[in-house]
Length: 364
Image (cartoon, rainbow, N blue to C red; front, side, top):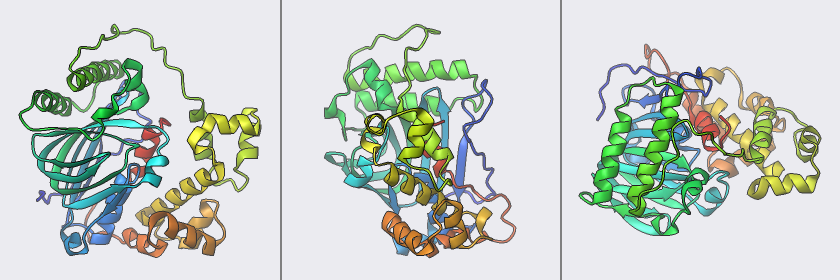
């Protein structure tokens, strides 16, 4: 399905110069490189901020994928190509989404079928699907290639109330909406890799208004170029940043956070809202961090127990139980992804889920 030349891997980590907000993130997984477990674990990681990946064991040996993403202002653009896999987000996963996002996807090849939010769908080439990150999902992507436009829902709702009737909506090939949105997403994908931050932010704002106008059938007024943003940062974001940076601290918990920010415990819980269970949040983030290290070639020299301890979880038995409950498989199964790739592979595709998760949570 894919060309077999060696990939050039570029990793966006949220620390580029201020004059460039569009450096691409790219991971390419070829069946000519690495074991099936190694490729599938990297694909699980890439998709982990938004749901769970399942690959039929009968298709594992030939599984391939190519994930490209870039940021324009507040918008993330995606181009994804992959062998057949199932993607799920159950009610528990959806409830753990800390910042909801609008996703507009154009299918270029293959078929996306299953349950998208409240609707049963079959999205064929040329069609556009609309979904939210905090909706449930159970879809199979059959040898599909798609383009994505992703924007935080709170930014959408500053422009207009989000019509819930659009959740899970599919605009078929040839419809006015699919045609216009398809041209817009394709044009954004064709932009040069490097664009000045100001131009990227302006393109994002223009594109957001265009997308919303297509979806609702009415033209939205657009703020003038260079107009000052009146956005107020979510007060939970600095707390989430603090948690993410201190996960290895064994004393990390509500008392430590309250001291750091001068908050009462009740005020902390009000700010954190649905994520007010601090202990559960810390445990989930530690497990995700440990999972990435276990699956990373960079930490193949460490035992599973050493990695757990590195993430503030010194009791190996408790860690293994919590890991299996969280991900549905044992840490030893994830360890398979730390195998060296085929001899002479060269650059190893990175684990990118942590970078994507930071962006989705508004932490980068």
